[in-house]
Length: 95
Image (tube, rainbow, N blue to C red; front, side, top):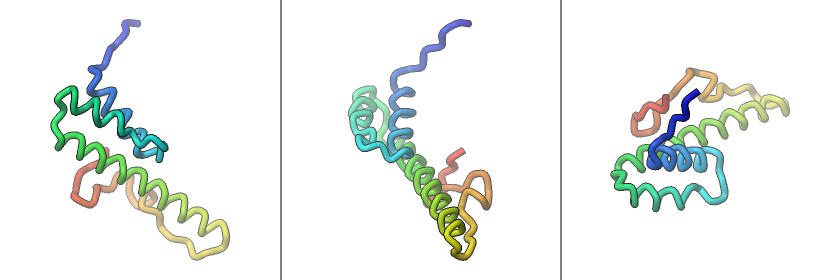
């Protein structure tokens, strides 16, 4: 199998998104500097940040809804239960 190498800017974008979505303590801040150094437009970085935050927030809401239901609270529909992919607040698609 041949090795596929991603451009460093793609790796940095993926890493930034993963750090934000996972609530990593470092938050991917070093990736922002790398992305700027690679010449990635600020609008692209902003889009990745918005989508990652949206995914992180949806995951938290889904966990909260399951926890509330498990402890005997009224069942609430978690955002992820409603549809496969919901857009961000500004209307960006996350899938």
